[in-house]
Length: 252
Image (cartoon, rainbow, N blue to C red; front, side):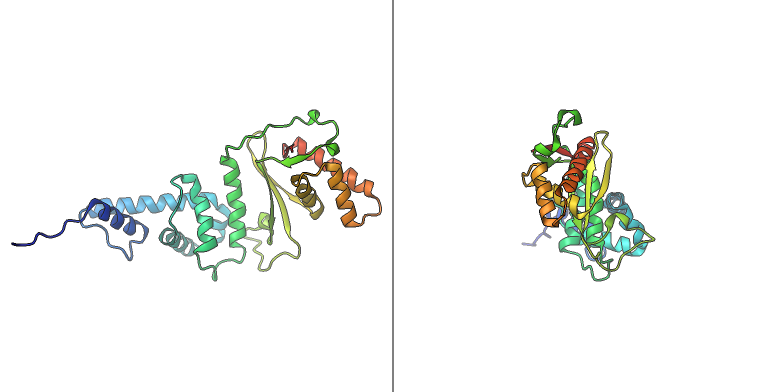
């Protein structure tokens, strides 16, 4: 009996197709797909991935030479297997690639932190979190209340001033002190940031730990060994009122 050549299963064809799309240089295309069509699939897939990543990380893209950028996107496609089918999650998958799979030895020292900061803007813009918005006039004495930061307000700490990085400023060393930022989505759905100092960042931490504004301010005054605790308390009260106006705080 003459043996018939084994026919490739549909699943095997799918795996070969996906392997070629990811890494066409090292994985041949399936034999039973017209080359013209394969070229279209390959270009569409790459252009979609590259476009989503470019849009999510515009500053990183601007800082990266074309050849390096496209090599990085191809490396991402080869090494990383996305866990989510959602397009807007591609940016989060790219962060995971930078964190765990990429050789960063030739990349800017700040690449992971810059990418995270840029991703935060996208994540907040598409978030479906919904906190009960406080009207500032609902709170008569903010210092007496317990607050948390809204689900749409993220306190962040970086080693590099990521909010200042651009073509004209690319730090080569970490900052002397931590960089505290608060990124939030306002009631009109604009994502913006504010830079915090160590004291205001500490106030937010203490609020999120369940302290009242008054207790938090008194603790900060003790930690600073401030000669006049009332100055710190008044400053905390002003910050609480400002954050309430911006929709950054919710009742704890």
